[in-house]
Amino acid sequence: MRPRVARRQFLQGFVAMTTVSALSPLSLLGQSDSPFRVAVINDEISQDFGHACEVAAREFGMRWIELRSMWKKNIVNLDEKEVAEGRRILEKYELKVTDIASPLFKVDWPDAPKSKFSSEAGFRADFTYDQQDEVLDRAISMAKAFHTDRVRCFDFWRLENQAPYRAAINEKLLQAANKCGQNGIILILENEPSCNTGTGAEAAKILDAVQSPHLMLNWDPGNAATLGEVPYPNGYNLLPKKRIGHCHCKDAIKTAKGYDWAPMGGGIIDWEGQFNALKRDGYDYAVSLETHWDGGGSPEASSRKSWAGMKKLLQQAGAL
Image (cartoon, rainbow, N blue to C red; front, side, top):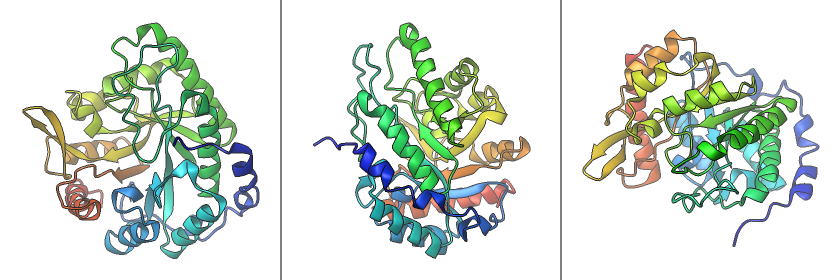
């Protein structure tokens, strides 16, 4: 059954929580020994949010975490009690939130042919186009509740020919970014191979077309690689560096059938070069492990191995 978005009831439940003083214990913590906010997406470890936070903080030594789904619910579907419990767990493990990894705009564009990717929602997300305004409202409420200034979105399911719809899609992105801006939030657009913006080259075009200070890029070299782009240096060099607001970290390998995921450091992406370039260019936002690779036997074991590779690459780049 498709989840219902009970917007009015949900938003009322956050009135008290979003008025907490900015001087909470979370906001007083310093950054780790890195120019970046080194993080992991929580559900890449476990759907048990407490356990995921324990691994991220106590084992991985992180001070940041990215929120996508927990307790088998998408982040935008959490109720008031679940949010309160999530906040309690974050405070226990002294973790701050990089962003809300929402499923916003991971849907078909309404006036276009149905995309061949439109059945791939995943991560407990199954929303219609008509629900997207409410998804955005809930994502903004989540950002305020979890004390982050970033919400992730996508560029609608990939079309064979997006040209006839591009201007209208850009306007929708602009409207969403402006709404985020009115709430003190940055909208970060992820390059995703199953969506219309999948590579660095495509991301550069969208950022040029949608000139909003409230829209930045969630740069994902792994995703770009699966569309045949060399993400670093080729794709990265095309990007406006000041508009990169988040970075996902996963690796990929080329196979006879196309591409598959790999643990960090075990694929074709020059992550040491990418980390060096981000550091050189003054980037100081998140580098967030999005394992995806499942060769470790379980999500937690796979993430543990991928984090070992990422940690080594950060150290080689002088960023940890």
